[in-house]
Image (tube, rainbow, N blue to C red; front, side, top):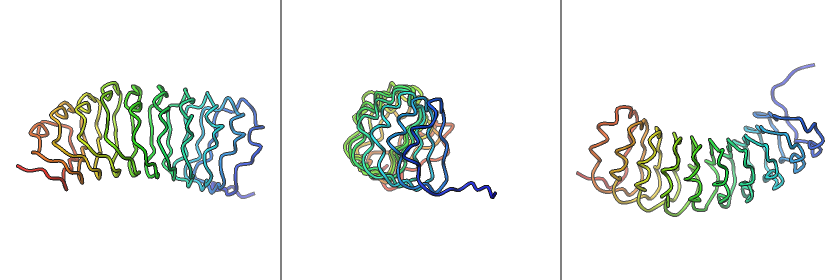
Length: 250
């Protein structure tokens, strides 16, 4: 026969009848349509689901939240509509959650319960809520990407300092406003910060001067005022700095 890397069709509804010992399910970059069958939650041993780069076009079934051994859920680059399951905070083993897709509605508060999370990516969705403050207290988080959504409100990020491991934050292209929290300065491991294309205002905080590991800082297309901080000159690792389209002076 002819082997092909690309298959079309949908995931059979009886997938839950597979062995309970199944640990990983890889089917990325195919032409799979339809949705994730609710019966997938019968596969209680499943730790890894990768369906990125397909044509899935149905919402995530609520039953997924019962998969307590699930560590990785990759649904990037599909067309899945509807909300992110409200009870997703039940997936206590989850380490990677990549949902760059077509989801709408709110970011569930329960995400802040997922203390094992290392990567969250929900960019290029239609999400339109505030960012739950609980997200900013995940101390194993390395990467947080919520860019290109319709997120609103201020960053009430007083708890940012507990994100000890965070390396990358991208909240660009949203509708966030208010001032930049001083607490960003506590993120000593941060190398990439993109807050561009929002409506942040006031001056760039002095606390940003502690971000000595910064390689990329993009604050362009906001309403920031005041002067360009002198401390940026001492950032020895800085490769990309974009402060354009603001109200900076001096």
